[in-house]
Length: 219
Image (cartoon, rainbow, N blue to C red; front, side):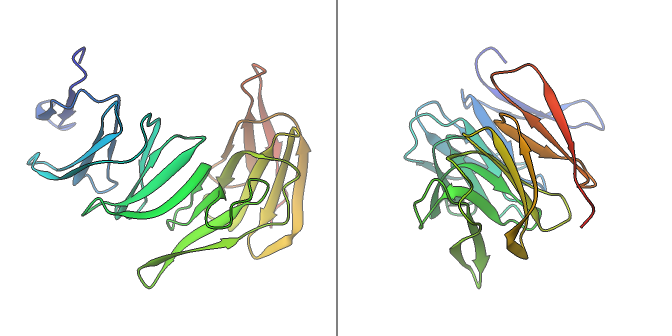
């Protein structure tokens, strides 16, 4: 509403099931619908249980201006921060910080993260972050991407990642063969999105009105 409150609705009945007087500009709901993350303007994060609305925890994320909030696919963690700046990965059940990374960031279907830099701090490299035995590990993914990272995306079902750099170039790699580039396209891009079948890649630039569609060879 105009007050900044959030209302959750039952899609079957059309009735409001919960009102959150959070006055927050951003919010996220976990994939299984049991958690609601309310993000305040000053970087405060509140985690609520659904459908009861019971507050599980509240904390300041350390990010004064949050423009990005997303649960990982399994709902165990919440990624908050600036879409093109510093991000914190929080444990959904406790609010504890698990990982500090830097956007842009992409999240795969299995919960793997790809970012411009993490523990390896090089904005011209792509770094993978994955959880193993309950702990997050980071490793360099690719060869130098030819410039600073502008956008990154995972293919839906295939171990393929696309990156766009500030040299107006888009590069596509297979994660199992990171030293061999699958495709290279030349266009400015600030957003990348794979088609559902992974056979095409859409690129969008903030400086032009066009959406470009790129065909990818089967792998």
